[in-house]
Length: 290
Image 1 (cartoon, one colour):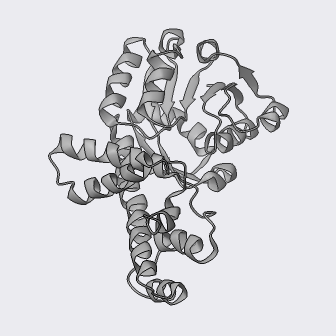
Image 2 (image 1 turned 180 degrees about the vertical axis):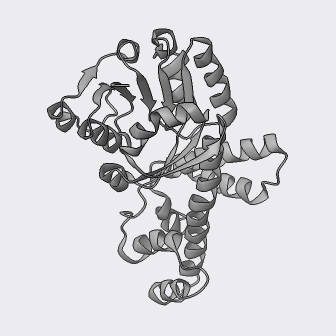
């Protein structure tokens, strides 16, 4: 496996691309207006392509790093036409956050072409992507995962094999519902506390020294105290998408989703009011303005 293709050189994809190119693989990427600047990738020998299908025709593995299920489907079986262009034996690696039922359907279509599919969504932030220290949550055939593990290790610190195809995306939704859901809860409660007149410094100090302390609080606290979202540059609309995906997954499993649906409803309201591009910690001020 030598030639690697990447669709999605955005906030997370750029770091993935840089580490792949730096660690011995021949990188190909799709030129797209949503990409981060790619001059540094070109200097590393990467090749940009105007269409995903043309790129797929020369690659041994294709990584997809886009927003969600509609975009993944468009790349593979929609306007991107990657499925039709795959060479026999190509491995498709979906690093996006997607609906597991769609993942399994796409995997079947890829297999029918004589190719392979694994889902490998990621956690952590663009900082860790640039450092090659992402967490990958992987689902798929053990032999195929073993074949691509050296590639995955080029841009990850931890690899968690969750099970068969679709299980990586399921684990990602569980992770995001808990991690982002905690941020949403803290931001909502912070809005209420500040509206009630509680001193913000005292509030953060109290929470950090009790049972509410942790990464989620740190991400909200930096915004409440300093107006900075540096620790979590994750938009409300993306969190809303993920909460919706989780609720759909829980519904298929017959699981209780009362709290998840409440969080999804709150974020949906902010998206519908035009605040979807704001970062999740900003919920603490957006709700005060209501």
